[in-house]
Length: 173
Image (tube, rainbow, N blue to C red; front, side, top):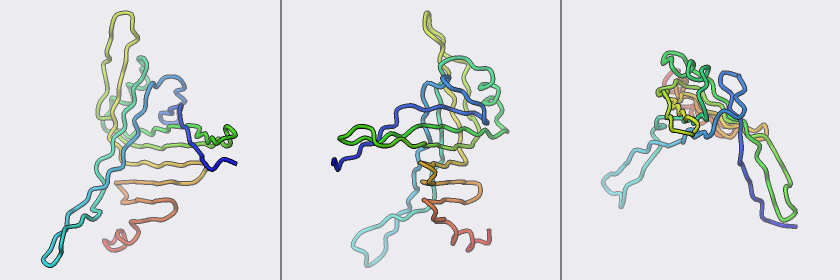
């Protein structure tokens, strides 16, 4: 029996406000969770250390493979949040071949901050890339929450652990 397990995630589908957009997105760049760290140094310390102080802004980009008016209508309004769902199938392989295939879903909510008029080239399909400022992100794999971040509600969960519960209680939220 092989000890090595290799995960492959090679395709996905995009939903915009619950509408299935199968085959319309060419590429999705999900938000990168980047922890802000603040440096601490003091007398008597041989060095300095960094500690968590928040989360940097979250962004999502989607490259569309053509002009889709319903997508551009949603992305044109800077006052309305949009829910994006990216659904994928995570495959696991070992020496015997594919041994498991489970759902992996990213939930994103935010406001589009860029929407394109498009890039048009001769004998080439037009490309459209939208960029979103994200306020909510959640990743679920095989029904298990991996993380959940809601910057407007001060929620940051890793697995089932709410790592900001004391912070919210301490500030009276």
